[in-house]
Image (cartoon, rainbow, N blue to C red):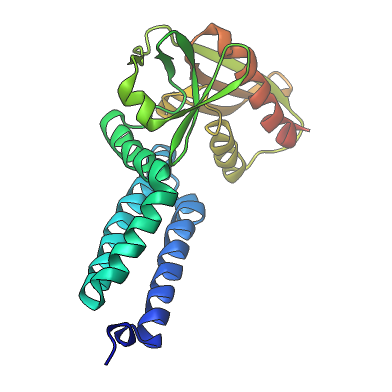
Length: 238
């Protein structure tokens, strides 16, 4: 019997089913299961770590498939390996460095970073690259490999500022409304320390007021943060 015949249709469908299942599982966990959490700090932490766990899992799964191919046919396994390396080499390397960088540095989303002479705010941590927004509002992308080969520094949060935004309410806000508002505010990269975020409704004379207290990295991001919060509040207060 030819070695290639050992890869039966059952095995092929099994692998397709497993890949489909795990793709759906990780996607569903990050997009839906996490949304049921009431603890915003835990929610943000899981949103950060689930993609890391997913990427690590796929490395082990790929090793499992490759091991199976080696047992079936070494030549087929070698051709498949070389083919994938030639096409996806840069992406694979940056994916590995991305996992290492995130594990070493934690969730640096929203932090100020300096890469050589360039400084900006980290606005996205993708699988293979980091996106940094300059003071001029332009987005620059840095592959994770470059973060290990260049001079990089993330200063401590020493210039952070507590700001208090107030809005007059025209409608009643439920607990769920307040919870959803907090989630939307935390989507901004300019917010630091989620546990410091406070959203309260109180009475002032004959008016109902909404008070939002949060920490921003430094004063130059206040306008951008206020614009983001204003947009989210407009949906609720009018």
